[in-house]
Image (cartoon, rainbow, N blue to C red; front, side, top):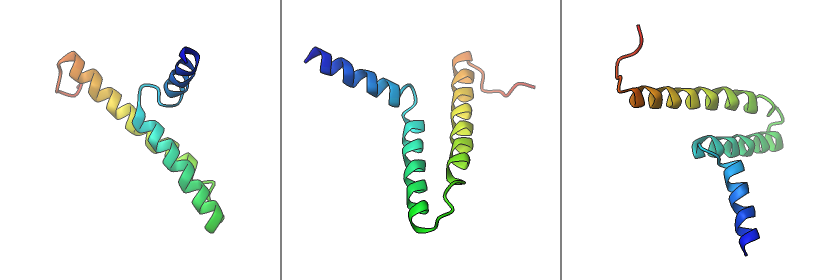
Length: 77
């Protein structure tokens, strides 16, 4: 049972990692790509757009966290 628990923890940490929002966004983008490919055919554009949006969200959240940790609510000038 210890091996199974360790295996499950590895995959959870590998897939989810530190940011569950990104993991959910990737799953949603894959699902949207699948749906568009099945019904429309022009689905290749979904993933690059999703990557750009998710990267921007991740960087914005990290920047807010860094500012909060530094105790500064003022943007750098």
